[in-house]
Length: 166
Image (cartoon, rainbow, N blue to C red; front, top):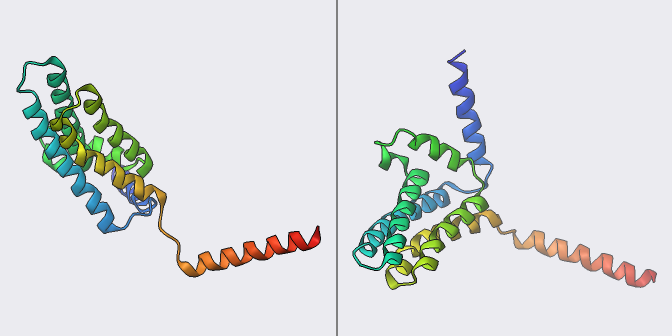
């Protein structure tokens, strides 16, 4: 029975990742942006903590937590010392792209609202860009010009028929 369960879990995981409509290179781009966003959040958060202002320290700590979350979700191999890293990554992979977009963008905006400085702004920029990339993938693929022209022609014909009938 235990032999069947991992195969079913692996099939469920591959079907959920294939259903989001992202190509392999775009998925890799999003993951790379997530890792770079984690690095920038960690470095800028550490730099932000070297101050006496409590809001800057709080924003810096939150930026370092953002970096940890980005590493856990996008690159769990970077966090091998954390036991639940693969579990968090699997749950994050099951999220839809628009959910990831909202989560990453909200996570990146909170330290900026807490302490609006150049360090927090540039430190969270790549993490915010990761959310934007996931948001763009949630919009879907662009349609081709032929299908769009056919759709417009059908719409034009139905509008002409409505005007001629009234």
